[in-house]
Length: 365
Image 1 (tube, rainbow, N blue to C red):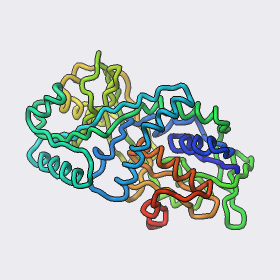
Image 2: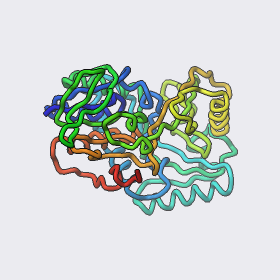
Image 3: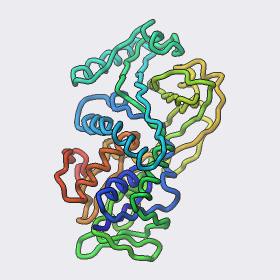
Image 4: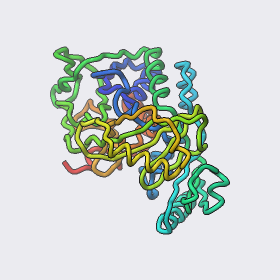
């Protein structure tokens, strides 16, 4: 079997590795360096409990993917020789006001009711867990099962693992997908026609712009997220921490990733003074010590957002096309489960996830 994957970010590479290790011939089509867009701009939080507001299919999908991560990360390290810095750090949702304290209590309640580990902390309990957090934080929820990974290391591992498994990488502009008798049979890459048994569209924010896919451009739109890199001599916290205005993700080597904005500005990846100021203020509000950290870098990525915030997975508008896009803020988290289900679809196996809530036809065109 021959498969073309349009897009060489976290989704395209994850699917490529899954398929190639099962003997499928895979070619990844990428217009630039693999992982150069949203994948490399992520913070690497594997945090369904931190991110989700309520139980439902999206939480279930995210929890399944988080559960796959320990074995997936280990396998990638063995296949590539790259340590992806998978860390069982835990996460903290924090609040500064009485209203936010009530939200923290509600979060703990529904998560415990769903069988998840979560613990509400108040006052001195917060500083006992994380001594360097601000005294102004009045309540927090600890999620010990939320973990993290270094996205740049992960992308490097995936790229090497894919190459070692026999994946072909092709750099070039995909002019359009090729349709024949109502079926997608390949892609036009700068005038050259490449054919395949299946095409997987995993082009992130650009998925709706690929001609011939029949994917409505309104279904996947770019959402800019600005980020700031900081550095201290040692990490200020063990957990990564999130409030209503931002988050901080400490690395073991003293680097801290602070984010993030959520801006609908088209395909503009610019970094703005306003965005950086908001991120730094949120970071310092949570961890006052970061006021003395060195700012080492700023950047922005374009996250692929769908109208309802859920990923778009499964069969495309035409036979021969599969979709793996619209993952918004949780692309790193959802990589292993996406690779698994797309691999099952390509190989004609029983799909072990109910994809109905994530199919493209759920969205109005």
